[in-house]
Length: 166
Image (cartoon, rainbow, N blue to C red):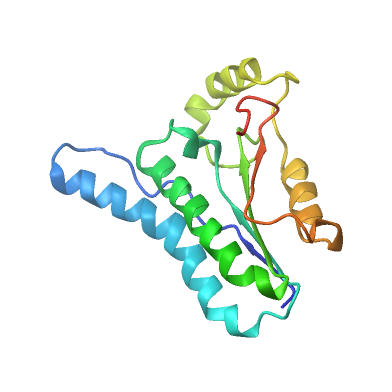
């Protein structure tokens, strides 16, 4: 396996009811869906990764402070990725995170808020357009290529400039 793309995740429930138990369930669910999926799959195949392999994990702009339990889970992926790149770097294995903003034609946002969210997202970008699945695919393809062999431990912010990485 030369390339691993950790692309599982999503919103694991929302706080439909009040109470500490509901909050705990939401946070645990988002951690399981977004962090443990990547960590456990990566650890399972880690012994079989050849030198110079590539690991790309899909994060989110929500890690920059707008996403509650979901954003915290995506931020945890970024911290995990930093350690992973350090541990696997001596073998030439790269580990990076692609952190998209709003990506159109996905089922992440329910229809009821999709148009409102789309308008807000476009207004926040510098190129005045939403992202597309093709934008994500092209970025992942580059990170999986030999040309990205010296790019590791990074968060690639794919959001039209809505968030400028530091």
